[in-house]
Length: 387
Image 1 (cartoon, rainbow, N blue to C red):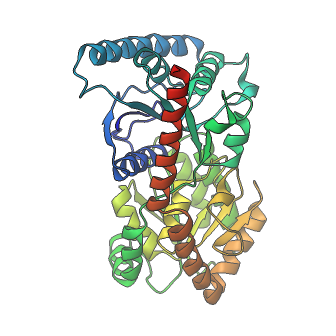
Image 2: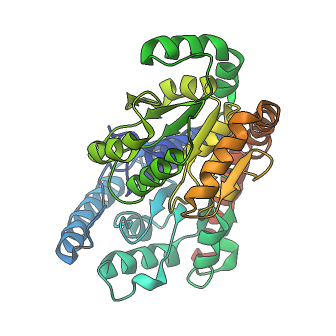
Image 3: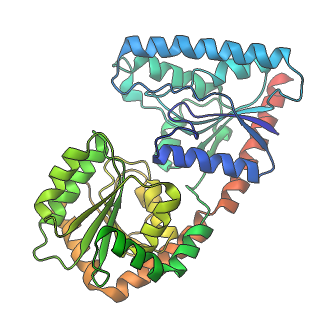
């Protein structure tokens, strides 16, 4: 099929790396691997981070203009250019889909969404316009793929049919991570020289953008927890950058400069070596839906200590591939880090289990199967609606 792809939160071509961009790129690759021709409908970013009603209305007007232009182009063009299906990734009250529903209505094509969410508590609040637009898109959808049970449960009362809901495990292509892990010692030597790390000590790794809100809250919790550990045997490698960097540095400074090393922003490809070379990923994951970083770490054979927020347990099997800590528990987080940095045998067993789980439950192959099944169901539902 010819698929028009759109990500209202962040396009797969956006210059700033993030989990959102990463998942958008992976979905694009999975759709192509499923035999489909994928084109970017628009790189229009519909995100309002401040809950400003005027901003939301301006975004709605801009979205309506873009949708009208797409409709005119595709209705006037040849059949070869017209999409057979619209696919939107990550729509919610802060970044609703102003494009997909009107385009699909005008062209009479199926509308499919992945990681759509509905927060009823936002009714009548600052994001009311975005929530209403998201609800309209969700109700219009012929298929919705959810990465977490939490999202799927919240959608059940507002979809047009339970048959529209499809469960999909977060996924990636594990091959590059496996290859990097098999070359772990070389990656470790390179990073040790580049960042001044001691190759003979355990390396903790954190990977995240440095921005206000949940990410900064995670960094602050990480700083508090690691600062509880006296005379640590490890060193912490921090990969990430952003507008809140000064606050992140402040949060981690009490640990000691001799223990914390900042690597700055890294591309997804470069991060693979960081995962493979490290000994333990540490990330509180405050309010994260599931966290692509956790899945990438697992694929590279890196166990984790993480906060048990939302869908994190979909990625991390606590006690098997890492240790999950209750939200905001600095003491338990520190104790888990101490436990796994001291117990090499257990940490290595978790590393092997994490890599195996990523391969068996979160593979690109499995994602392609689920995606194609959902697309077929969406097309069937749209055909029924035409009768």
